Length: 565
Image (cartoon, rainbow, N blue to C red; front, side, top):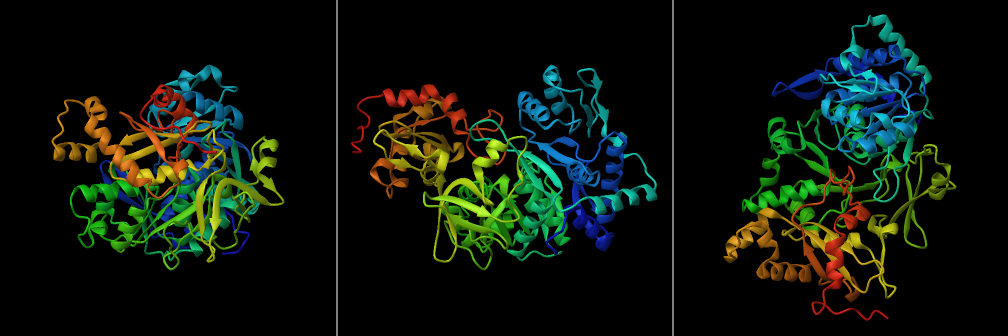
């Protein structure tokens, strides 16, 4: 692909070359149906015409607030063909979070999935800075302020072929590699969200560079369930599909992914480590870990490789996938880098690393251990926030905020988050992500948060795996009548104490977790405790569980304070 490709060019070329070929599989009325590239292209151009008729002008920001569905894909491309800027919002966000992003972006129009999202906006309508026009994909009789919410079908009325062709030709001429394609608000593990500005070149070059690292073909079928509002799913599922001309299938929901795999038999899957760990644990619970091809059969029978990103992958999951003959390839990136910086490949895959830099991307590690990157994938900057932009961009190099190391083969290893480094009262620097990764490798621990900044020692909030804990309780004959009793039972606490000690046996004395608290619920997006890519929002979690954390530090006689001098 030429270096000056745009997403508009790539999609138009794909539709022209492969019009009658199957492009996408979407579940409708309980069954999957298939659409061709020609079908998708016509829907995109009709929606683009509708947006223009609704008053969308070049450079306008259009809010897309929806869960994954076919209309999300159509609207993403339609907005770009209308010469506007797609500004997607993560579907799980609250009304207050949503209205903040609408106001900050200055959007004039909002595309909603349905009543659930509309109700969020209706509740905070008085906070909107402008009288935005709203359209919904599903039926909805609500109003936002003084405006009724209109059906999306009004934007997709029939158009004559000459009009659609004119819109396509105008977009092909007007959209340049430097044109702003999207504004993506970072979920923000700390602080206020920032609008990441990504250009057509950012997205197109990163898609092409990512594909250059993998063996993907037109015969592949990829199942998508990563949120398209996040750049991982958008670049690595959606745009790679367009460039390769392969087939894409949309999972019905996060809860139906395994069933969808069995129905569609995908060859490729992108996901976060949490998903792959849940698959491992399900097969483990069934007692089939050593059964040949059980993993591939569990996910439809045709899976040839999977890609993991967004967080650290536990070693035991990597080992299991490797033994099963399904390579699990780790990658690394940020919203600010479109997102892929490095990626393991089928021919160059190394456990515990996130691979070497993809083509046309540079990576280096600064003297303080911070990872920096340069190339066509690096964002233009933060929207209306030059001060924040200047903090991370210097001479074309982006400071990622992550800590890491490059080995002799150029493979990158992530060791922690610069801003998340815990500094104990004794002055020891501790990377909590590394310790949490070790803890969650244990089948009894599904989530962990390590705390200890400015304290004498580390403590941890642990979320037990309910199924595995239940099995242990039954096997050991522990008498409990409720979940609350189980989490406080001395034998259960002793079991977890032993597991924590085993998992952290290889770390230094000041990196040991001295106390822990078992939690009755997991960290969630809905509670604001995780970002859309399932990263922990530490400050929020620590606030929500402040009482439990303080109680661990008030207890006496259970752990020695460390002499770290």
